[in-house]
Length: 198
Image 1 (cartoon, rainbow, N blue to C red):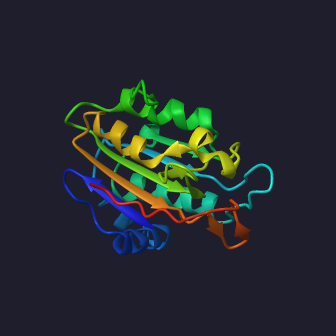
Image 2: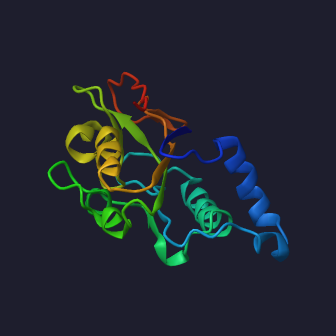
Image 3: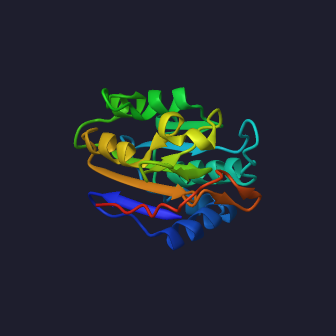
């Protein structure tokens, strides 16, 4: 899982896993002490059921549900400020995160400038671009072989999040960008992409 943050830091990935587990098992009095962050906004994507020959990501919906509980019960985000996309299409990713020419997607429209903390979580396939060597989130309606036209670029995600005006942004990517999966290769001639935040 890749983890990226801009602004004030949140707990690390290991702490997240522990907190999600604790949230699921904690008695009500412990949850009552959760933080309050009414301006926090989250986008949680769980891409499980892909079309065509792309194998399913069996755990993606469960991960999305666990992350939603974490941002609401632990981070204190309002339930109404959490966008959950299960089996997101390219159109849904564009509409939520914005496009190259228009960064003002649904998420940016929900952000209160300098007041909102933003959390983005993605569980699903990631793929490398065959020609441009960029990393892409793979929508469920996309062909992995045509990531450069059908995927959502990671660098565009970071760029558009940086323009949203949030107080802080934290991104969790539970995806592999090698072009491979446990069920076999997603693309025939894959070279892995190593995504780093700047």
